[in-house]
Length: 88
Image 1 (spheres, rainbow, N blue to C red):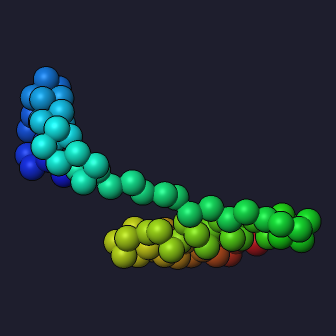
Image 2: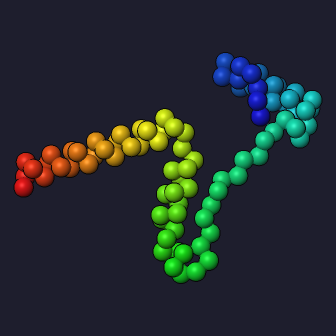
Image 3: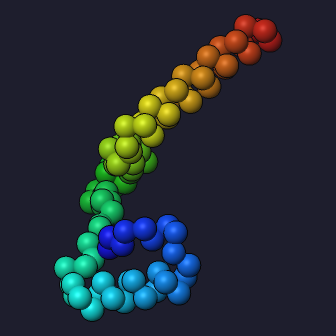
């Protein structure tokens, strides 16, 4: 549901705006979103569930979120490499 300026409304104003929007637009006022899920069928599929869930999660990220993940993974790999050199 889109309500312009909702961030600046107090709870009572927001409630009034939501109810007004529902009354004027009816079913057209809301948009239903469904989360994609992986449903394994076989035992082998069940073993692959973590990888499939990670893939579904990755596909759902915004570009900035994906870049952030890549940077954090890179930092962790580099840190691990540095720590291995110091203690190895």
